[in-house]
Length: 195
Image (cartoon, rainbow, N blue to C red; front, top):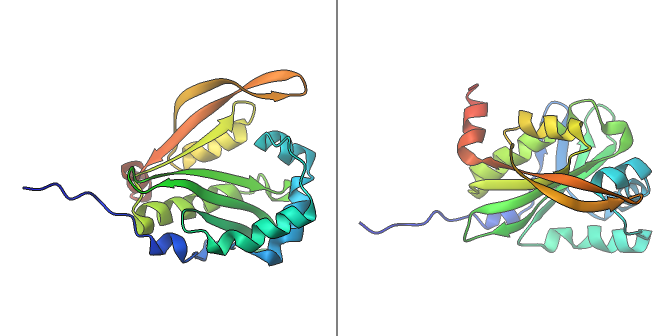
């Protein structure tokens, strides 16, 4: 019997989804989000939590947002708070490996959007889409060890710590570690089934 490798649904990546939860709507990141996305890059706490040293201009963010729909190897989505209709941040499935059925994940929420479960719901929605629609087997991320709230969120969504990356961020003259975390398709299924 010949082995038939699973195949990623490339259309599920190229055709950017809109996903709805009770608290958030995830919509394709576009030019209409540029000003809010730029403002998020200016937030000192957001910069620290994401380890962002680089300064951005509105023009750079505008061009970035304008090109997201064209990408065939990643998905960038805006997180919209359904209670207010406002921009709450953005997320991405990135570095998609078509051979290994894997991708990286990142999410950044604005300061006013944290602590209300929006990130947990957004992450669960994206994982369901990644595993059930795209056909990925593994989604991984890095999170700094000084961000226990994010670590707890990712654990709730089925991510497990696989290791520690030592001294990956130098911030205000100090070195910080990060956890490598990953969620696998079978784990996500168990969480959906209540196990």
